[in-house]
Length: 471
Image (tube, helix red, strand yellow):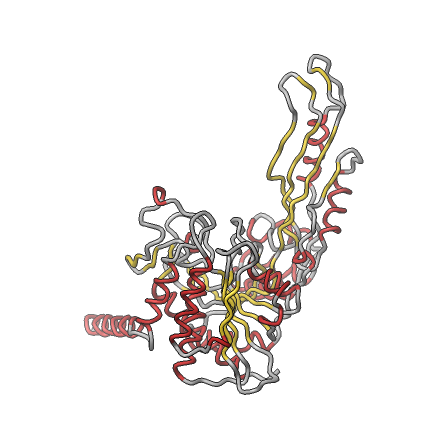
C-alpha cells in the first residue's frame, strides 16, 4: 500500500508539474517580445530607452494598433530618454482608463562582473538571467504583451486600457519619463488608477509561496545638508569651537532621534494580516502597534527588524561627510548629507524642522534641496474594495490560500509623480520572488521562469476585471 500510495503521489506531482509547464496561449510570442526588450540596452551610459519604446511600438502596430493610439515621446534635448503611451479603447467613451505603468531603463551592469552577459537573456535552471530580466522589463513585457493579446482577441472592456513605458526611474541620469508625462502630457495618461511595479509575491528559501502583496503608497527620498561654517585658523592654535566637533555633536543627536510612529491603510493592513502569520513576540507587537501606535514596548520589538522599522514612520540617516580644506588648518566648513525616507503625506519642511529641533544648534544649518520633490507631500492611495477585490479574486484562483497583504514601499518607484497629479497608483504584479528579491540592482539579476509566466496570466485576468468595472 505504501508503494502504491507513493507511486500515486509521484504521478500526481508529475501531472501537476506538466500542467504548470504547459504553454500558455501566445507564450512563444511573449517570450520573443520579452527577449527583445531585455536585450535592448537601456542603461544611461550606453543604451537607449527610445529604441526600446520604438521596438515595443512596432510590435503593437503589427498587432493592429493604429498610429492614432500610439504616442512615442522624448523629452526635449534627451533623444535617448523616450517612452511610449498606447491606448486600447473601451466601450464607454466616458469611462476613465486603467493605466499600466512600467519603466524600461535599467541599472548599469559590467560584463566583467557578471557570470553571464548581462544583456543577453539566458534561461538556465528555471530562471531567466539578464539585467532588467526582473526590474522592470518583466512587467513592461507583460503589459505590452497583454495589450497585444487583448487586441488579438478583439476584447472590448468598458474602460479604456492605457500603457505607459517610461525611462529614468532608476535615476542614473535619464529624464524621469513618468514625471515628465505627469507635468507635460497629463492628458495622455489620465486614468482612474494605475498599476505599477513595487509589489509581488514572497517565496521562502524552499520556494514555497508565503504572501502576495499590494503596494499602496511609498516613502520618498530627500537628502538634507547639515552645514557648519567657521573662521578657521592654524591647527597649532586649536579652539573649542571647531566646525567638525559641532557637526559631530549634531549628528550624534540625529542618531538618537526617532520620528513618531505613523500608520496608514497599507501598514495597518500589513501588520494586521502578518501578525497571525508571524506569531510570537513580533506577531503580538504587530497587533499591539495597530491598536496603539504609541505603544513603546511594541515599537521596540518591531524596530529591531530594519525592514519593519523602515515602514513605521520617517527615517533619517547620515550618508556622506565632508570637512576641512587642509591638514594643518582648522576646518572652515563641515558638511554632512542626511538622507531621509519620508512617510507618505509628511512634508519635506516638517521633516527639516524636526531635524532643526533635534540638532538644537543655530550654528548648524539644515538645508533642504532646491525644488523640494512633490512626492514627499503625497499621501498613500486608498485601498478600496474596487482595487483590492479583483486582486484577491484572481490571486485566490491562481494561488489558493495565499494571503493578499498590503504593503508600504520603503523604497521608491514611479508611483509618486502620478499620485501627485491625482492618479492613484498601486503596485501589483503577480511575480513571486525568492528571498534574494531576484538580485535586483545587483549581479546576475534573475527571475523565475514559472513566476514570470504565472504573472503574465495573473495580470491578464486582473486587467480584464478592472476594465469591466463601473466607475
